[in-house]
Image (tube, rainbow over all chains, first blue to last red; front, top):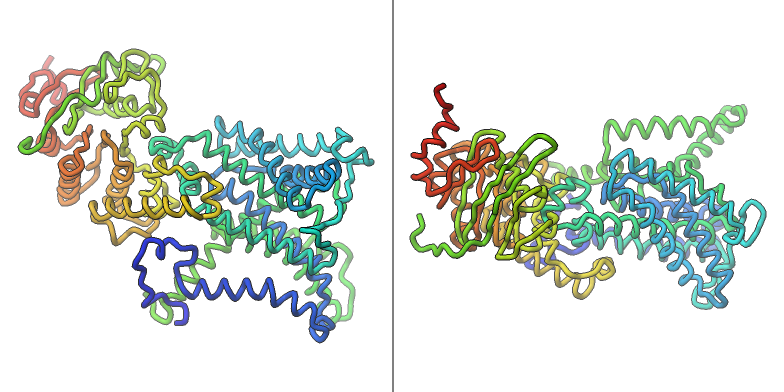
Length: 368
Length: 262
């Protein structure tokens, strides 16, 4: 009964087209932002709470990777979920972003970190356009196979050309220190806040794009490309822009992956299975949904942790040790089962379930 | 029918258009014109080349011979989105809506070609991008009012019944404010009441917006009532052209529809 829009009248189109037209949503998102930007860091600084929870682990091992994967999933969702172009090259574009940011910082003296991230995104976008060219001719599974070329080519090139990794052995690079506006980002909580800020801004930008004419053009191309062209949507520009923006997002995610999460990365860390992981995130979370990118990333990052915790508690309470590797294999089995489940039962993922729940909530306790 | 309306000069001239797919000839030397403010029907038996003709007009197919001139400009080879930009909109025989989007978003796509803001401005949703969204929303609402679909504006089109989907498709075409509207069987599969509604909308569009209309339709009573002039195609050739009455009494047309005694 709390979640009902009765009495909220819209008298202008601006009010009707705002980001969150329902007042309860606006309040909810404001609370969420306050908690993640202020509440969580404050809790980590409070000795009483910080003593009970290992915040360093939660920031570095859970929240930062969750946010970075959300950003990559968001990038893939723009391309696959909104513009309808299936891609298996996500990890490649992340690799481009990571190595580009590294090289910009290495070779341009005094390069600010944020500028190097943006430039890394731009480089990834340019590579994305090149590998998006086949989409003008082919669609669906055939396009997915063509984007595999990006995946293999990029990893190969990063290993083959030593210049890109500053001639380190097997292409391993160590990311430079994060300095933002002269302010060293050197603790887990600072890294968390930096990543959170970048991801929030880019998620907002993505949401704005998909509710404007470019987003409608993408969805039109996805839903029926012939009709889109007849309505006056230029196919080439729309598809290549989707590839460029998607790759920009993946490139920035890759740069953050190297600089704010792992610190040390190698080309072999951006193999096909990373692309698949991100694809699974949008399948589970919701294809064609900004929120779904976050839900899917949360699910896939948190599931192994949840499995580990439950295994540990089983071991504790029953007093025996589970065979080594059992839990990680079980996690993989669960992943596979869940992906099949979502594809069959709810192809639009967790985001769709959330939407159905909201629709039900609007009417509750009445049936309709 | 024509009282009060001023039929102007030809807006679309089709001259000797031939189109073949490999060995299959779809159109053979078809010539006709459409005048400003006119409702022009194309009729003919199944497979006569009616839809192919529309596809030639808006650039989906490129004819091997002959020319199409729109607003006096002869064009060699035009792509569909360029045709849309020049002022040609259409609906499809099988509904071609964007099924993942709401009615409102579907109609808004009809105005995409008039939107100028860059994707960076749209990403910020600030200044020109926001102003543009609101201006075009106001225009789209006019179309929604015109076609009486206010109650379904936020509904995903996939959930709508057939008749309303057809109306949304017409709305999407009208949102572009076209000078020439191509309607491919707008009343196919409708019951009498829905046909009456749709006929009223077609006449209103023509009358109030001054749009020239090319209409493909199988229901002869609709064609005879609505159109100013009728082109009859059979096996890709034009067999008759004139007012509904002239066409109705044409020997060749009767033969094409009823068959000839051999």
